[in-house]
Length: 427
Image (tube, rainbow, N blue to C red; front, top):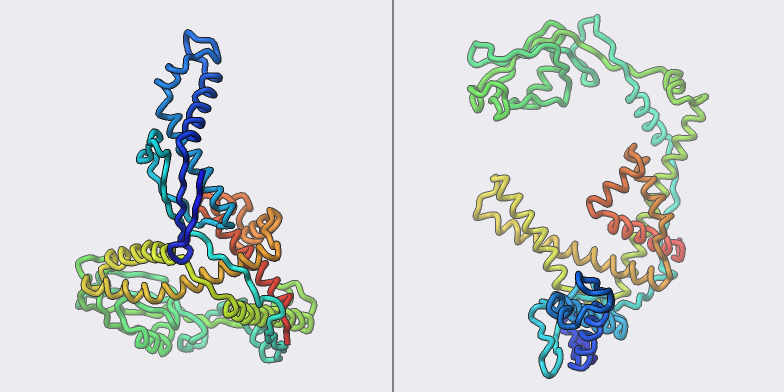
């Protein structure tokens, strides 16, 4: 078997296989003999089925298997001899390959391969890791958030207006002219809330100026999902009557400490400071890792498989175009323009992501960094804990959605980024 490989485009290979007729004949005869030796048909003892009967019943399938076997053998040999890692498989129509041609089989096929990268400049990269400090004001802000999350409502007895940090219980009547068409009782209303079809700022201003027993009207246009279909799109009025007013009161320190099972405020502030410091250190590390990776990318230049990029973009943009068309909010004549704009933006992002992946994988290969089953297990456990789910349910979800390979890539990237950070010159 003669095998030649040529590069016809960036990361695009063409393989030519020439298989002599003698080899084809030997393969076919060998498979027929093997089938004859192992078949057991009615009227014949095992291994005694005539060749002519095997040929008649199974000749077509045998010849197809021979084609597939020889082409796969040639493809694998081409990859091995030329140190090629494919990212697509050749598309070959076996039915169009004759086995009985006098010259044997001569066939060309193409596929996409990973870029050939010998990564360099990835050790000892200069990176800045700024020291972190925690200011008392940051701790104060976190303590305030803890208090805020534990506020309790207190009913107003003094006749105050609805506080911005509070709420009211109200009755809302929806009117068409002077007729009430819908009424809702015991609704909670508060600052920042929107009343569909009405002005948000006007609603908030009137609400915050109201006390218990007050009523105010809000002009509105009934929205498309309003419960009374006959008034949709028409002007109307929402009449709001304040039944009760509540303030939100912060708990005492002792209540917060008891809820958190912490002895005193000094201990609480110390723990908050530790968490803030850890978060800032992680942020600085991510910034340093990104700085390192950017410099590594600048040291490694290579061409990308354009065909793969185009195919991925076409798939993504086809979905985007369908989404725009189904929404119906974008004029038909604008859809193609939007798609073209997305193509330009997405192509740059997609190319950058693919470059990074190839470089990180090349570094992993060179440094013998692997994703073990223990790594996968730890990440599955972490995901399950973050989502309050069972590990087996997480595995099923990732497997059923074809996401396990992507998870493995994410873990590999994290391990390589850690390797680059640990081997960087940090200042």
